[in-house]
Structure formats: C-alpha cells, structure tokens
Length: 146
Ligand code: 4NP
Image (tube, rainbow, N blue to C red):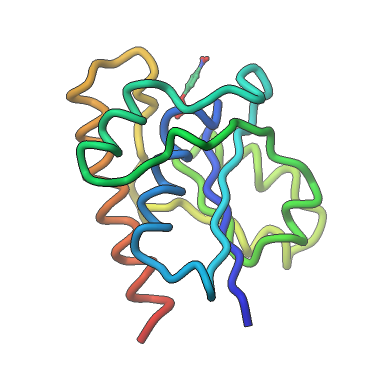
C-alpha cells in the first residue's frame, strides 16, 4: 500500500520543498508519495527559493520543478504523516485538525528540534538546514523501511 507523506513549513518555498526533495531522494516513488505545502498562502504557485534550489542541486537533488501551495484541510485525509518544520507550524496545523486521528498524524520532522526559518538568512543557513533535513529524512526512512 502506498504511504503518503506531507512536509509543511510557512511559505512552502524554503524548507518544505527541500524536505520533499530530500525524502524523495531516499524513498522509492513506487511506494511513497511525498508532497509539501505551506501554512501561509503568500507564495502560492512560486518555484522554491533559489537558495533552496541551489543547495539541493549541490547535493544532486532537483527541486526546481516544485510549485508552492497552501495546506488544505483535505490534506489531513490525503496524507498518512504530516511533518512540520517548527513549533509554530506544529501549533497551526494541530489547531486545524478536527479529530484526534488527524492531530496524531502531525509531528515535528526532527523530533525535539526545529528546522529554523532561513528566509532572512544566507546560503550557509540553507546548507545547515539541508544537513538537518538529511538527518530527519534518514530517521523517517529507517522508521518506515525495516
Ligand atoms: P519557508 O520560509 O517557510 O521555509 O518556506 C519562508 C518563506 C517565506 C517567508 C518566510 C519564511 N516570508 O515571510 O515570506
């Protein structure tokens, strides 16, 4: 059976597109559907931030085709797991959940650690975030495939 995983940040242009690309690079597309979304709608339809595209490409991952979208309530039913980047996203998405089953699908992508918002940072911050997401996705993979 296919497993559906959603990565969520604020704008869906910096962190969650990278998270989507990193996890896709680790899991077979035949068994896993991976997508990303933002809690805010100000960047809908845009490509990922050029700094995310660049750091992904540096690590051999193409995320340039992605387009930002906003999280929608239907996502609670479409996805089995919803990973959020920081505690602010966690609060927002958990508040949108209408049932405990929906709420239980939501967790921080890195347990006990936030993926900090890099929007006002520089390329070094994007490289640091890539490292954190790589670690997070290795853990997700080992939890799913064993
Ligand atoms: P993201 O980063 O949530 O990782 O996509 C941000 C993107 C845009 C903004 C903030 C964070 N913004 O304020 O426009």
